Image 1: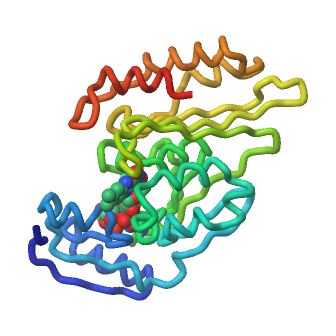
Image 2 (image 1 turned 60 degrees about the vertical axis):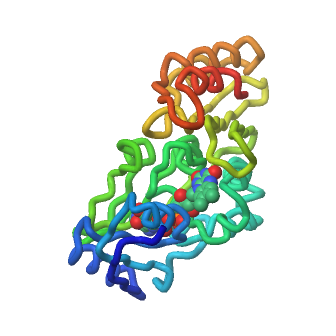
Length: 276
Ligand SMILES: Cc1cc2nc3c(=O)[nH]c(=O)nc-3n(C[C@H](O)[C@H](O)[C@H](O)COP(=O)(O)OP(=O)(O)OC[C@H]3O[C@@H](n4cnc5c(N)ncnc54)[C@H](O)[C@@H]3O)c2cc1C
């Protein structure tokens, strides 16, 4: 399959990219790693009139700590995140999750901003953003705004981004010492999108009682889901087997998974209770 005809623009600054978005409105599409956009265009599921290629825009590719959070430029490749010592050492959940995205060839091109902006509910990074309590930085003709992960994802492949705005950075706040982490997912084959994935951060104090916890799931509905019941069930308690079982049971009541080619809604609900 080949894409429908389109015009191509390669801006070199964020301002130029935003001006092009303003000119073409919702008939333009930003191109980052192309790992989701190009297949959609080739299948004619997306038919943008103008492709605004971000790959020559300067200043969007960085990984650094700012104000207690990992700041990642939107155009940072997923593979760069995986290879950064800072991420491996202080953001181990992110390190674990990013390795589950497709295969190395995909992560070599796919970007952090592209994954978050694309908002595939089965993707790993949106769930990690929710668990960290992270936010995205967005720029448009009306200025810059910072949007919390919990309000960014609106529906399947739909976010708070306006047609003339672009994502410039993603921030993942660092969790304190004493925090454990886990990202676990079930997919049909290695490298496939998860049928269901679960991301957890959990902090214990010296008495091994839970002082902070966040749980998010991917693949269980139109948007990544941050569990409401986890803090209620765990805060102030040791995360023993009985409590973790209660959390796993509670998640089934919170989610509305859908059936598709890969898994039925019932199977996804079942997975959400046994992945831990
Ligand atoms: C075989 C295969 C397997 C895959 N498996 C997984 C997987 O297991 N998990 C997973 O999470 N992903 C998976 N992916 C998708 C991959 O991670 C993509 O890299 C990611 O979804 C999109 O990132 P990208 O940089 O390629 O974005 P693109 O494909 O370039 O863009 C995707 C969408 O985001 C928009 N966009 C991109 N950048 C910005 C920005 N800065 N601001 C606003 N909008 C922007 C584009 O306009 C487009 O609508 C897979 C892809 C393939 C081909």
